[in-house]
Image (tube, rainbow, N blue to C red; front, side, top):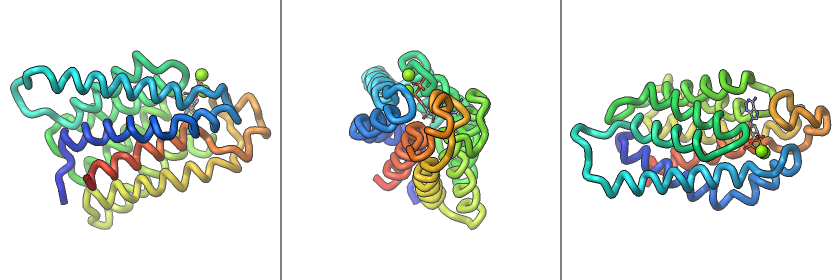
Length: 217
Ligand code: ADP
Ligand code: MG
Ligand code: MG
């Protein structure tokens, strides 16, 4: 299998920006149903800013020492925190910041991929004070961690872990449809939030799908 290194992390992030741009309308429409209709715009603005900063870094002479996966994820974190308003900016920002802290090395192996997913989940859950089943992005991150852990425990490769995580997040996002939101703007709707997919859970599934696609490209 191909190693998951800083170049993979950069492909992941650039792919995420493309996928989010493509899904901007869909995410915004989901957020219109149970929120304020800005989730697609928020993330698209943030990831476009991330790509601009990656392009700036690429134009600079390389600093001494090998770039780590964490270096790339930290750039994402700080950029999202400063460019994305609303709930999603601090939530994703914290996820990437925590993920960066456990990936400060040139390459990550399957257990380290699981550690990255776990760190992201803990970041979102602690920042949002949310737990699984509250119809938020926590549901997708949580499913990804469980599936990734199982795949790594079975001796799976980096790609196996990412595939399991991405598929589980996708299923979990769909699984938010019948739930009643108890955190975030959607919770203002109470029972009327049921019957709609949570936009943040869907965007999380897209982010993790991009991680898999980057590992396969
Ligand atoms: P805002 O709600 O401020 O407009 P966004 O629309 O960008 O922010 O993001 C909304 C998403 O953020 C929701 O779909 C949900 O997944 C996530 N979210 C909101 N509040 C919380 C929370 N307290 N904990 C975890 N996730 C949350
Ligand atoms: Mg919103
Ligand atoms: Mg908003």
